[in-house]
Length: 455
Ligand SMILES: C[S@@+](CC[C@H](N)C(=O)[O-])C[C@H]1O[C@@H](n2cnc3c(N)ncnc32)[C@H](O)[C@@H]1O
Image 1 (cartoon, rainbow, N blue to C red):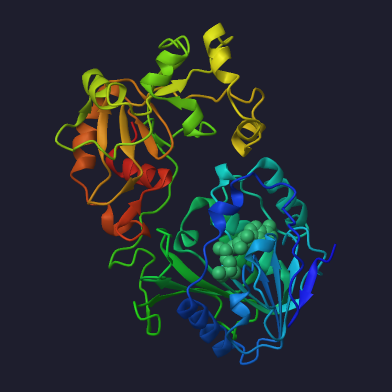
Image 2: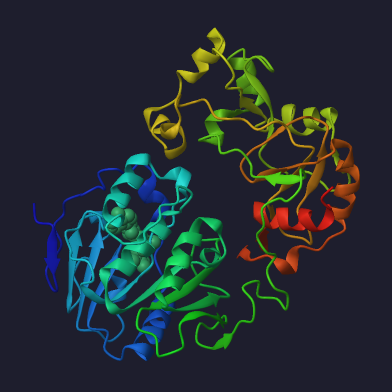
């Protein structure tokens, strides 16, 4: 099988899938980079390397990064033959093979450019992750993080593929400079003394991407004393740059990350392995004759539709707004032997679901460790001054983007909720997408540490 095509020739029309890719992996990650953004990436690269030398692009699609810029030769890797250009651009070759399985030497290229796939960790199969890690564990200092999005694995790969004085220039989500899942990657770059320039894009002009993007440039050979993180802002026209004071983009510094120092603590929402399967609507609960407590427990995955007029999630509100409104609200209860009815429902799970990262890691694929109901539930994503928060009288379990706060003592929940609802979090967290903010669990713990004094 011809896995390689060079400039001027047409690539082999053979499909080479990543051996480990789940069925819908590709559909999630095939978003093309708008031409003005490709041009801006190259402007920033050629400012630092007037001729980029040997260039690599992992996940090259139609090799559009070979259509601009000044370089000697470009090598693109792509797994989907349908994505390749009809004609390979000049000075380029394209290899139809997975970036993580390619037999290219480490430290071989001068520059790595591209827009790596964005696929959340729970949509990556365990075998996809294993294949990526087989390649990445060659890196001295590589630390795996099971919460990583696909683009984090590609960033590690890019750093390893360029020479000791190489440059990496990637279009990736801006969240990478703040999310805990990319912490090991940031610490690694810092320890190497590399220069990291992050250009926050006010509007990257992607057709169907909501996440705020940035251009990240990592220079392994910084001018003396210029290592470390440098933040910039790129405006709507994609051509003017200005410095950005804080990662938040406001005049205020980001909320710090702390572990809880008292019994009052925030805990992230449960990742059940697939909300579609593990959190049922009332209709499905009835169809499979599942019983509350024996088979399922109340659960909340979203507050999007709830108004903030009320501050308590009562049993009645739960019934009206979730159970009777047809929303997902019943979490599979993993305790003990499953009833005949639950066994019947579990038998409907697909092989793909059972093989996803979360399910495959468990002793029994469907048995998650469900946290006890917290006294306060809040949505980690928000658009106004503060996340939506409710006192949890419905004793619902927090799932996904809904996080929980355990209050010690429990009766302090009312007072704490009042204090939290009076706060403005919006200028102290990093925006994920236009107007959409997210507070991480340990940022909430830092807030709780301030509000609750240790006994
Ligand atoms: C976000 S798109 C970017 C495409 C193109 N470089 C651009 O900027 O428009 C990511 C590409 O990576 C490809 N891809 C995903 N996983 C890959 C892998 N393991 N190896 C090589 N290519 C991969 C996808 O098929 C997709 O074309």
